[in-house]
Length: 257
Length: 206
Image 1 (cartoon, each protein chain N blue to C red):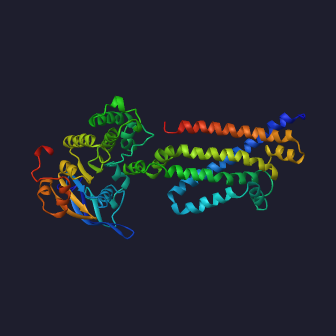
Image 2 (cartoon, rainbow over the protein chains, first blue to last red):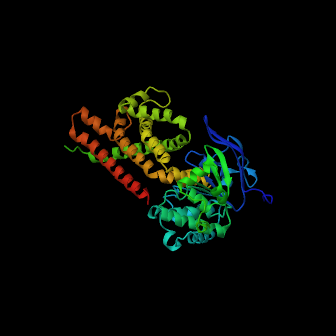
Image 3 (cartoon, rainbow over the protein chains, first blue to last red):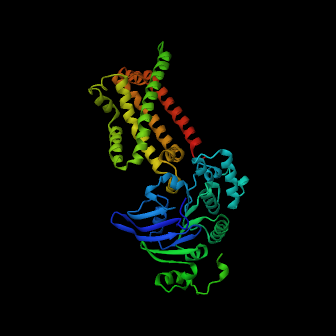
C-alpha cells in the first residue's frame, strides 16, 4: 500500500534519449491520487513519450518514473501494465474479437471467472453509454469512431485500475462527438475517482478536463498550473496556447465542470 | 492407346506424388512458420534468411535437385533428396508471408495489446497469428501449388511421382504417357488451390 500522501505517479529528473536525440529533458513532477493531470504540448514536445514511461512501454534513459512509489524498472512490467488503463487515439480494438471480448480482455488475462467478466463487461458498456445487448456481440468495424473510443475507455476501465493514461483519445473524432466524450470522461471521473494522466495538444480540452496542466515544450516542463492559474499566466508559452483560442481571461465558468 | 494397367499406374503414381508433396509441405511448414515468427522478433536475421530462401527459389528446380545429389548424408538419388529440394523450394513463400502477415498487424492493435499487459506469447497466439492467418495461408497456398508442379521433377532423380509419366512420355514421344502425368498433377494443383482458398476466405476478418 502506498504511504499516505504519496504521489500516484512521480517523475524524478527523467530524461529520455533515442540515439542522439533528447526527447525528454530532466522532467520532474508529481501526479496526486485522484487528479487529472493534462500533459499539454505541441507535436514533438515529448508528451506521448512521457506517458509511455508510466506504463513501462518505454523506460527512462536517466532518472526514475515511480508508480505508487515503485520505479517502473523495478516492477513486473506485465503486472504494472495490467494495473493501468490505456486509451489511445487510434483506439486499437482487436478486429477479430467482439466488443465484449475486447472489453473483457484484461480481466480474462487476469483469470477472472467468466460470469464475473460478463457482468463487468455489461456494467462497463452501460457506463460508457453503449447498450450491451446491442453492442456486446458486434465487431469493432461495425461501430462508428466515437462508439469505438467509448469501447476503448470501457476496456481501459475493465480491471478497475487506479490509474488511467489517455493519449489524445478524442483527437480523431469530430467536434460534437469529441464534446460528448469529454462530458462522458468528466462524468466517469466524478463517479469513479480515478487518477488520470491525459495527453492533448488542445488547450480547450486541457482547460475543460484537467485539475492541473503541465505544459511540455521540446521535452522540458515549462509550466505546471491549475486551469485558473494557466488562464492568468503571462508566460509566453501559455499566452501562445491561449491566443489560439482567441481567449479573454474572463472564461465562462460554465465551461468547466 | 490406353495400355493395360495405365489406370492403375495413374492411381499409384498420383498417390506417390501426393505423399511426396504432403511430406515436403509438412516439413516446409514446420521449419518455415516458426522461422518466420523468429524473424519478426530478430530484424537483423531477416536479410540473411530471406536471401537464402530467395536463392533456393531462383535456382532452376532441376538444377537444385542436381546440386543436392553429390552432397553426403542428405544427397544421393531418390525420395529423400527430392523432399529436401522441395522443402527448400517451398520455404520462400511461407517465410515471406509469415513475416509480412505478422509485421502487418495494425500498430495500434499491437501497442494496445502490449500496453494492456499481454506477454509475448499471448500476443503471438491471441493477436498476431490470428490476424496474420489469412496472409500466412496465402503463402501456404502458393507454396503448395508450386510444390505440386515442382514435384514432377523428382522423377528425374528417382523420386517417383507423376513426373515418371512425363519423362517417360517425352523420351518415347508418347502423348498419352505425358498426359497421364500432367493432367492428374494439374487436377491436384487446382483442388489444392481451391481448397486452401476456401479456408483462407473463412479465416479472413469474420
